[in-house]
Each structure stands twice: as structure tokens, then as C-alpha cells.
Amino acid sequence: MDALEPSEDMLAVAKEKNIYGRLIQDFLGTNRLDIEEGEYDATVMVGGMAEGHVGCDCLEELIRVVKPGGFVVICMREVNLRKVPEYHKLEPRMAALQSEGCWERVSRDVFPNYPTTAKGKMESSLCIVCVDQNEQNKICPKMLKEIFDKRCLLHSKYVQ
Image (cartoon, rainbow, N blue to C red; front, top):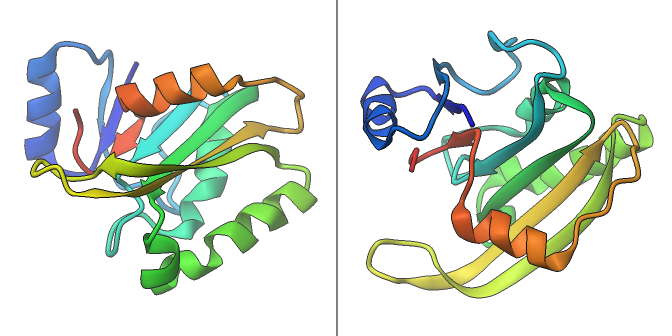
């Protein structure tokens, strides 16, 4: 598992955990990352889609770095779809990418009463799973919950 994070300080925290292979310092957006096409079985973004962070223009790059049939998992606070203007266009952009044959949405699940802060504030969290290039992989609810609970990531506001 590799980590992508723009902050040098957060990558230092990630390095201390000794669980990541490659630590990549870069922003996720329209730029091409220093990652080979189709390198990953899955990308998981947790906490990256918050106000002032990753924009909707990052989806194509997530698709590019995932193998055909690989998963793109996006976990975020559900309220951000309504509160953050950038994310008003997230699901329409995802639908457009599906229409273009780039990926297929596998699931869209809301986890109510999920702790979203260190102080235990409870909010609804949204987890959207897409599979690259219309490969018909199946993801079971148990697997989705494990992905969400472990907060596995390729990119996160807080590299854990």
C-alpha cells in the first residue's frame, strides 16, 4: 500500500507508521502523478474531499492509476455534497465518466452516525465504489465495511 499526500509533514507521520511502501508527495488533481498507468488494484481516498482539498477534477487520474477492473473508492462526509460548491458537481461528473465508459459505479452507501473527528462527532459518511473500465467485479457489503472501517488509502487529508 502506498500513500499520496501533498504535505511533507504528514508524509513523515505516515513513514513512522511503517505500513506504506512508497510515499508520494504530490497533489491529486489534473496533474499526472508519478505513478504508472494501471499500477494499483484499488485507490481509496478518505478525507481528501473536504472544502479546499481535492477537487472533482481528480477522478480521471484515479481511474488512470487503477488496473482495468480495479476499484476506486471515495469516502467523504455526506454533508460535503451539499455544503461545498465544488462537490455539487461530483456525482454528475461520476455519472458522465460512467456514460463515457471509464468506469461503472458498484455502490453508493451512507454510513450514518460515523465518528468523523477525534472528539467523536457523529455524522453521516458516504462511500462510493466504482470499478474501472466497466469490468463487472462484485464487492460485498462486508468488504465495503472493512475498506471503510480500516480507512485504507491512497490519498487522505490525514495519512493514517
